[in-house]
Length: 330
Image (cartoon, rainbow, N blue to C red; front, side):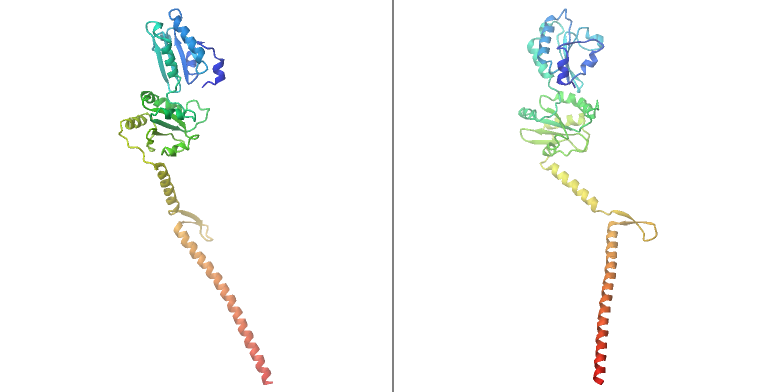
């Protein structure tokens, strides 16, 4: 998307042709193009230009004066179209009879609505705004991808679910969330994220209840619409509090069970160069036996030393007795 300085360098209203209009449509997250015949719609052109001067720092504004049919646009001039990227959506403000039907209030409302993305990114600044609307919020957590990647799986997913966001925007706020930057939010919403995978959860900000999108299912358009409809109709039970923590503990317990199960070790057979497989329990038994053997050897050595010492003492005592007896006889 365009930087602020790049937007500043563009003309207030860019003149477009059939050769550059396709590139212009994709310049930014929101792009406005007026399809006007200046000879028949001079007042609408003046009104459009005045809005472009006031808002050209927010979005690029273009003008195409040839008939829309020459480039395959299925609209009738005069018309103003807002192209919203990356959602592949467009909004049209048109008048099929005269430019007098499009007034200042219509154009102001149209611009305000079009500049709001269908699925905005969550920021610390706009979170309070979504909460203040007191509508359920559908958080779509997305993993990060290299900025050099032009069309990421995130872009594809957002384009796919854009019609759902537009359809239910009156009742639900759709927001996408950076899964790495806001990873701490997921457990608070009872959501366990899988590494490198998107996740979703719907939050009732009024009663503080959540509905977690099933982890075993791929996050996609049909599943998200089913979640939204189920919640709005009251057909889905909310996710119980503590679900994320319980799932984490269960996974840790499973990992511990796997570690404590029978494991195999490949070792060398004594002096034979062959290989042998033994289970963990058998190795523990063998280790105990080997330890017992070594302990027995050490004990026998110590016993032998003590026996030698005791034997030597006894021999010395016998020799002393014999010597004393000999002296007495003399």
